[in-house]
Every structure is written in C-alpha cells, then in structure tokens.
Image 1 (cartoon, each protein chain N blue to C red):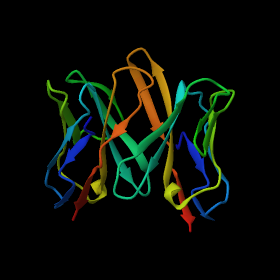
Image 2 (cartoon, chains in turn cyan, brown):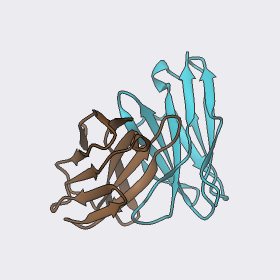
Image 3 (cartoon, rainbow over the protein chains, first blue to last red):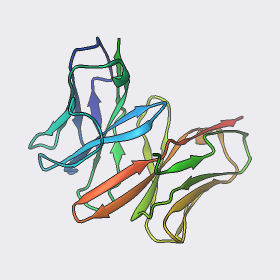
Image 4 (cartoon, rainbow over the protein chains, first blue to last red):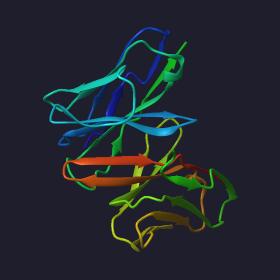
Length: 113
Length: 113
C-alpha cells in the first residue's frame, strides 16, 4: 500500500507571498492532519480534516488554512508568509477513530526569505 | 507551556550500550504513542500504549506506560547505529469525535559505531 505523499518537497518563498502544499493520504484513510515542525517548537498540530470538514484545530493564526477533497486529498495554504513560517510541514493520515495513529509523509521544507 | 517533557534532549552513546528516554506530563492521557524520525523523513509510528502500566516490546525496544497514564519510557537494549534518530512521544486526549494529539520536543539519539 502506498504511503502518504506530499508535494512539493522543497519550496522557497518570499515574505508576503502565499503558498499551497498538497497531501495525498494512504488509501482508505479519511483523516488528514497537518503539523509544523521547527527546531525551537518541535512538532505542533495545525489542524485535522475528516470527510471534507475541519474536525480539530491547533493554535495557529488564521493565515494557516486547509481543505480536504472528496477523495481525502488535502491542501494547506499559508497566506502573507512571515520569516517565522520557515519550517518542515508534515501531513499525516489516519483511520477516523482511536487510537489516532498518525502515518506521516516526508514533509515539505518551506523556506521564507 | 510544554505539556509533554522529554528527557534527555540529546543522547550520544556507543554501539552496544543500553539507554532509556523519558516522556513526562502532569496531564492524564487516553493513550500515548512513540515515533522515530530520521533526517529528511516524517516520523514513523513505533508503538501505541493504552492501558496504565502497560509494557510493550518491539525487538530491542521496550515501551512502558505509567500506571497513572501521565508518563512513559522507552528503553533500548544493545543500541545499534540504525537506532539513530529523533524519538518523539505523543500524548492523546480523546472524547467523542474530538481528540488532541500533543508531541514532545523529542530526544535526539546518536549511536556511534
């Protein structure tokens, strides 16, 4: 079974621009979560989508948004990029219920200059 | 406030040594997961522990969930260079369809040949 895929793997953007990241979950997984990983803050939860609806949300500003399509694929958008948004963005898919085990993709490395 | 404290942050040992890493919290979790992350990749799930006092073994890795479900430990016997990576614990609070998954900042383990 194919794993979680994320595109692009690397991205360089300028402050003030916006960016869209894409994630394809494992076949059959209907839950997709997004995380931001930085050396200082570690792995932080952004939001989770299930059946095209945002089910859970972390403590990030509204510049961070996402959506999920009917085939469970998900996109994450960051508007008005800031230098502090430079990070590894990880997508994870899982079954809909407990124990919520996360299957991660390789991540998108975003650099904001 | 960091909900999950992992210790030590860094650990460098020689091949063949034993080690233990810890994951502590003041919060009670529904379950707890351990992941390992290698450079350039997303975290990979190692184990999920659910019951207080539970012990799970995965080859040379032994995972224990505290009786009060507030803490966990990971013990590696006879470490090998292939064990090198960032070890992350994640505590889960769940209720109904809502859940919150919180990661610790990780223990970066280096096993030298």
